[in-house]
Image (cartoon, rainbow, N blue to C red; front, side, top):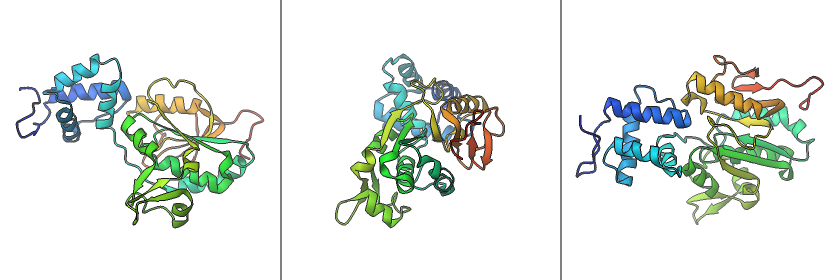
Length: 285
């Protein structure tokens, strides 16, 4: 079968099985994405757009380019094409209620509270966390580290501008206090500069060793584990656990469970886990 080629119309034929396997292997080795059989149509659509935009005439040519590129830009483009960056403001709201009801009291005793959102996508989760903590403990104490593997998603998050549709779940009081209207009538909303100053964005590949490792009282890593197999899940959760303070909390997506991997964290409630405290600890009591 000939390589995936661009027809004069710009249409791209379906991936051959060996082409899908090559992309699957590349995605798994470089950023842990487990593209199971059945995802061929999705990969074909997303990769076809990338090949058309970049001028490649075959998957083989493209994969060879990604493998030989030492700048990392080609791999970043593949990540952007295949990553699913779906998120929303106040997504899975009971996590934020738990943060407010169970942890804010202990957080308020600290001079600074820094929380890590480890798969922030286009940023809505980071801004939600910042607002919830601002409301609960005061703006002067809040710092959010927000990371993702996709440069495209991070650029969107850093722009901090969201359409009316994306903002429809926001409480009116939040819109008035933490956002500025874009246009009149508004076509969307932009996060205010004082809130933006509390959030730092970084590109982090969670399956690679994390440089400048620090410890946080809470880490949100939601709805990303579902894209990993068990081996990668265990590796990622192990790294995240090392980045938690003793007694700190890991929040995962409600569609995710850590029950089938070894991790050493304590189950608290659905999609919430806690790192055991050292003897004599108890920062959140």
